[in-house]
Image (cartoon, rainbow, N blue to C red; front, side, top):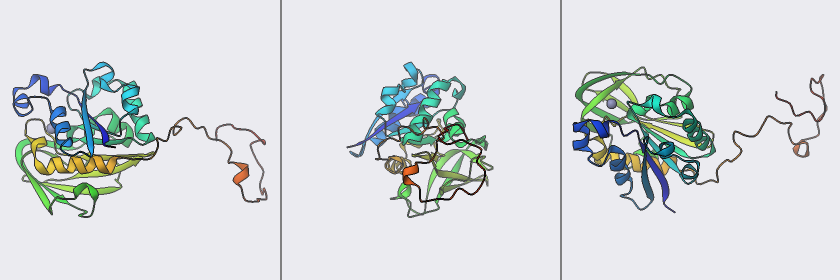
Length: 262
Ligand code: ZN
């Protein structure tokens, strides 16, 4: 079965900025989804912030294998209840791909637990993205590096937790470097942060970017059944039936059969 993917767009610049509309007449989210749909392995649709429940109802998220997130100007307008809903699905095993200025979205910061801040400069400079791990599934088909002729610069320090893997590092004409492709796991859900995607450049029309996004959806997809009780299960005594014979050696605070919090 094709990987059910939802591309979520904040859809603010797409509605207000003539440059963005020129590059993405159907909106960035629909351009990204169309790129993913170039392969039969992925079935991508889009959702925007202005939809009821931001287009992310419980029912739709339950049918989503991988969620792609682009936001920038309106992070604060995203409903906290929806953010918690998305976090829950990531814990259960839904993949999440966070693009560009999505580094400062509620959902990414919540899942990372750190500020996720960085430095930036908008000078249209060249960006060279070096592949750090050439065997990683996300960069298959990419050379030693690829370049974007015009990019907004994002620089270190990028205040995220140390990732599972650094897949890409960017270098910019202005001299900075940045960890631009990072993987994480939270609960059963795999997360990929991918830096490119500034709205006033045709980043999502770039063939290397499109290939990396397709690879990333394949990587982030977790075919296991959702980990349904990942956040409901309380602390509880270990299953006695599974225990090895064990002599109790010290004083015990808790009474037999007590299920309280520890
Ligand atoms: Zn930007």
